[in-house]
Length: 146
Image 1 (cartoon, rainbow, N blue to C red):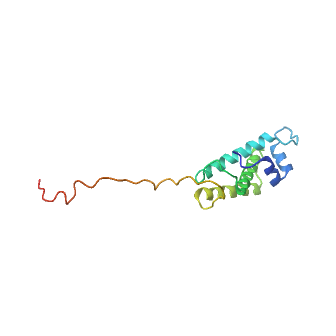
Image 2: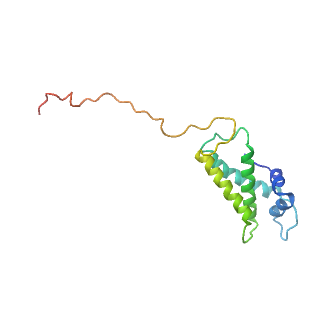
Image 3: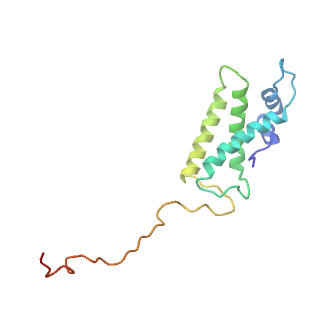
């Protein structure tokens, strides 16, 4: 399930930038490519799922605004990477690093999303071992001589 839309990217970064980043024509034709944008959003959403699955049941019942922002930051980074530019803008790299830090904090439980639905049960700590009383102990062997 994608956590953002092409319109979310356009609202956040502007139509000109998203069109420039999605245009794969040689030479560039200045045409917005919906499929390229959706692929970048899909990649970002899969990455986000990897972090969220540690704490939340997927798919999320509702998508919190923070997750939309993180998906946009990650999709923009991926679109910049795909342009083949020698160097990514520092602001794009900083946004991506910030998104990964926040997702890491969510996955580790240091940040919590406001979403409906239960978190998956924590692993470990649920095992209980029950056994019968000791057969051969000091009390049971009292008086026994080999």
